[in-house]
Image 1 (tube, rainbow, N blue to C red):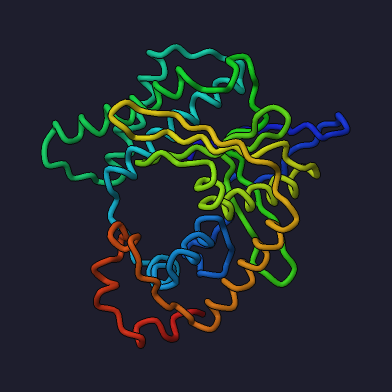
Image 2 (image 1 turned 60 degrees about the horizontal axis):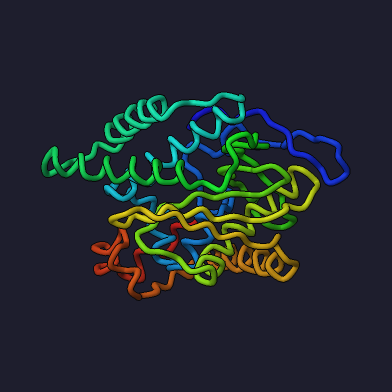
Amino acid sequence: MSPVVSTTVTRVTGKRTPLRRVESPQEPATPGPLDYLSASRLNCWQQCRLKFWFRYVARVESKPSPALLVGQAVHRVLQAWNHARWRGEHPTADDLRETFTIGWTELADEYAMKWTSTDEEQAHRDQAWSLFATYLAETPIPPDEKPEGVEVSVECEFAGLPRLIGVIDLVRTGGRIVDFKTSARTPSEGQAAQLHETQLSCYAVLYREATGTTEQALELHHLVKLKTPRIVITVLDPMTKIQEARLRFLMERCVQGVLAEDFTPSPGLHCMSCDYYGRCRKWQPRDVARRVA
């Protein structure tokens, strides 16, 4: 990950206060399941506790997929574009295409991607660039708007719970928290709000802890992988007290469940795309016992 941009966020009073941030969330070399909590860990717990066990307790590595590579490559060039805007620069499409190509190559090497043919890789690479190019053409962000934060790592302490950590993709002017997502389906506003409430609530809590102010809005920018890429912007109100209480409840139940070794599987349609589908078909209750320390 590129170094976090040193940045500030405007308070409602007009004063400016630095974001309290972590250069990268301070993880132990082999973090345990309760060393910290994050949006991704909580989402995994909500989706399937056995999947949580495979990923964060047994630490079974998953095989990188083309979809992951596309998403990461798009995210990397978005990050570079936002960093450039923060510095007051205006990169050309050619500049960004070069940044994208370098990033794609580095990620493909890092993931040791195995392609069936050069045509397969080219198709996925073209799809990733097309998503970003479409976003660049249709983005609701004015070209002269300077970000208040880019890829900011923040953390928050909770009494009696592991610390919460996260990385916010973008903080727009006025404290508008933005999360970028690539998706195979076009989300409705209701679906987006429901599916991503945990993640957005985590970011809202972290932002408030870091700045002492309430976010102005929460935005989901979906880059949808259709034949003709589509950009869907969902703008949500700031986190409510009820949503904050739900997040706290979820964190508490996650900790209690991990300590109780309650890794009950949750079969459903999501199983078909799960990294641990094959292993899950063979699991036995004794496999998940006495592994949380």
